[in-house]
Image (cartoon, rainbow, N blue to C red):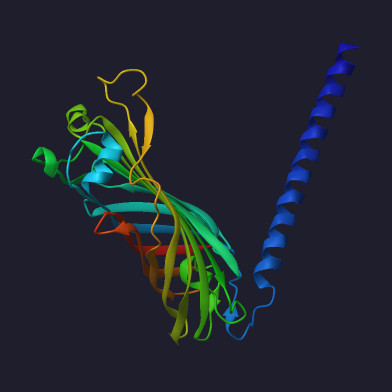
Length: 349
């Protein structure tokens, strides 16, 4: 009887495993077919091609930098810190850092991770969905290798922020819409999941959410800026621009695009966690520049140069530049610059 029960249990376990694998395999196959139909729908094959091998692995070397600039007048300072600091200026830059990265993609959908070669101070995550005609990307950058200056005129303060005293993080979500997906492929220039056979361009629509966060690690630094532990700058903008893929020779694609944008909403705030504050003051968040928002100009630009060596191998270079700004120089002003240069080798399989 025991032997019969053991055989029955073993049979049921094996059957369940085989069934689960079959269901999972069928689900993945359905997803694969859906993505391929979606990517091939409506394209002009005289201008755009799709490689036979849909998967690709990228090995990258990056150069990147984050910059943050803030100006505020005396009135804004009282709103933030409740004291007479006068005009405040903050200039923070990350060092230009070299990183290595690996990325895995399927038809423009992919994930990559970057690690700083110097002391491991900086890490980048990115998830991309380069498709047609709608797509986007998520990027998260963080670094402790920042330096700069902080000045408060009312207190006569001006001191340097050195490496290790603070951390800067940047969170970006970019979305785009291609108005000419039949002949122009944005993913041929960004994820290289398609092949631009002939030169073509398109008007591009874009929307961006950006958050920059500065965190002060050093207690002395926090005390000198009134117990402020974090500074947030959140922005949402949209706009329209143009992109062009130039194909001077077979396998060679040169891409250039720019999308000017208008900032339509922003939130700037500080989080106070001073060690000597009372319970009501700790962990409080205050608006940095009051409630008034000025419409501001931002922009995003990209350049890419790629060469397909064969059906399996690719090499190339790409760069992007994101610039976000809020406010006016006469009252308050804050901006973030985020740029990246990439050299890559890719293998399709």
